[in-house]
Image 1 (cartoon, rainbow, N blue to C red):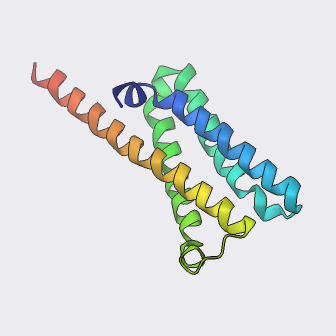
Image 2 (cartoon, rainbow, N blue to C red):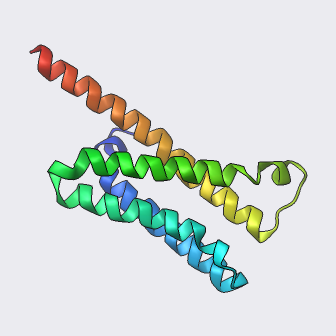
Length: 127
């Protein structure tokens, strides 16, 4: 887990790429523009993730931007939870669950990373 927390920009780019692929696959299957929502959220991971990876001074702001997109993805994916509980596993529900799971785990690691960075700053300030 320590490796993940230390490489969050790379994880953001990977998550962004996965969400873009999921969005494009569901769009090609259904030809509905709403199927591209995971791809749009994926861009919200990929672009700030690249900024954080390539520019250390932008890292904090870019990683907070990815956390906002993760929150949006969790809220958007959670909309279909009632359908899952009733046993509906249509393509739309599967896409929403993929969005919920990927964004939820990224949000978890973001929170853990933010905590680790804060603790590190506090320890450095105390010494």
